[in-house]
Image 1: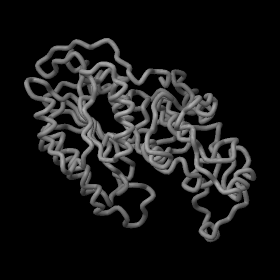
Image 2: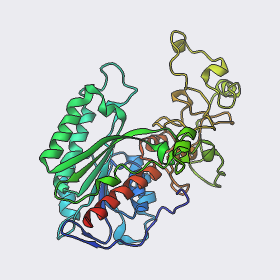
Image 3: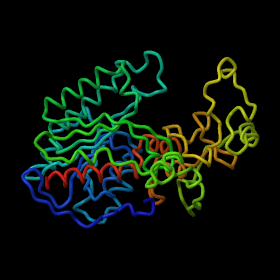
Image 4: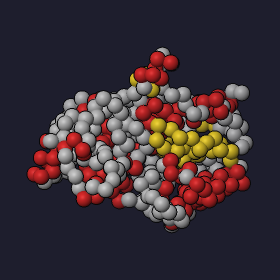
Length: 383
């Protein structure tokens, strides 16, 4: 899939029904970030009509890749570089979905730091960022899409955050949506070369016909044991696939952190597939516990890579050291773990690019999910 052009415009799908009438499904991407979900939508033959994102660097990336490169003017997304709390959903509805135009899908992953696994004890409870999930649904209520697909971290399912999820579910039901999920999905089970578990919540408007049998999409990849049990499965895509690709001349994202000589020597002492312990480096914070074993570790070539977090270019934050070279992974390599095509350029510099990559939905996973959603709508028409 990575060889696809960013502008993947397939043949149009003609469907006519009391619930759906379109030549191409149309969606809105909220909390769009750099555009991973939007790019996945394009690959799935879905038109992104509008996107909302606050971060300046993410907006620069979105414009450069998803707007300026779009050769079909009528299909260029409109990017709203605003705080979603200050942008009325009615404005998007009146601007883009009047005169018979309808919104088919609302996408988005509200910021999830409040639900992060890295926030321990009571941290994250009543975090104001959690309220953005409810703002997301205010958009759903106004735009009235046929379906919505929300992504978040597994921590959203923790008991301490139950009131936010319960409120979201209650608003969904009150506004005429039935929920399929929440569903935990590991990206490596769909060909993405990293371990990445996220929660996806699919909401279907109650008056819309949808084939529930297509959701969740069938797993396509697994480990050796799973492949033996089900010969149709392909083995997980290992990290070696990322590093086997050649460097791209002039690629502005072919950059990594500058490390001190002391750190470089630590990396030299770390064997292939080795962890922090293999380098014999013990920090004060490591003396009294055995946690954080992955920090300063080399990425293991023989298995799917680690989850690309917002700090994926920093070896002090996880197993993000290059498998053989003595530095952290490059922005381009992190992007490849997220299945962004090499033609996709991240703006804002090293740290900003790492944040955008870590926040993104893996493009190939997003495409699989959105093709399943499209199939569910299409099949529902034929029931």
